[in-house]
Image 1 (cartoon, one colour):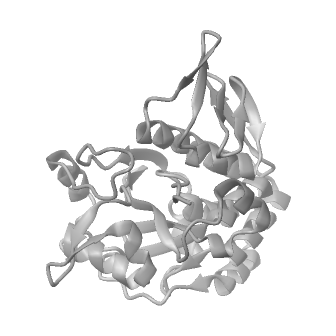
Image 2 (spheres, helix red, strand yellow; image 1 turned 90 degrees about the horizontal axis):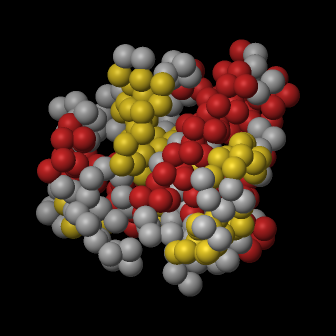
Image 3 (cartoon, helix red, strand yellow; image 1 turned 60 degrees about the vertical axis):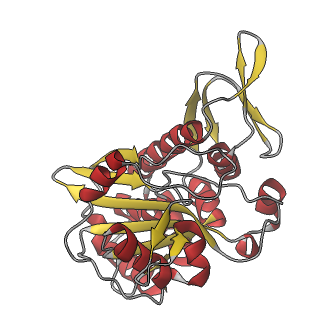
Length: 300
């Protein structure tokens, strides 16, 4: 079964930790910090640049999620590649297409998304060697992490201009504002065969990846909003999700994330060469190189 991306601008791993700032006491922060899984990776960049990786690992997903996503191919791939950097009062987010091809130190081309199969070090090295971006923090989250954090928050509110349905993604939502649970949020951001109800007629969604990126940005915004509004009980639930579902590099702790909590999110999508939806590779346009300049600090 063909793999389906589950989000393009999802800051799921980072967002889980952000939930802690709402009401968890310092002792709780220490508990979560000491319980986080650690990734075996050495980072070349400054502490200003974050890489959030959403991993498509069907082996780690529970039966309910597999009903929606299918069993997929073996191995853990990076379905989400998100760069983040704080600038003044904003947090710049740049979604990088998993199909982008970068050259490693030997000049060998490799796709960023598939590089995670060889481990996080391979992905970090490709960002440095192929894109000139030195990463200082890495956060990993999987399908279940997204589902659980949304459920821990009691769901999130989503507004759609048109009703949306996607049979393969097990998704059917009406127009307007509604509260969705974790599984529905996951289906919303990974839908690839969606149809919109326009003037009483179901029509294929024509925006493709752009439409998914827009929906993912909506989910992201609402997750962060829900975290900022959560009470202590919800915050503790999110803390437990973080403890069980997140993996970070050896040098990253909860307190590193707290400094980002009040920043305004400014999401962008890396401009890449236009390719068909089914194509496996793409390159970066000159405008995309300019976007990456914001994250290049000369460390690579």
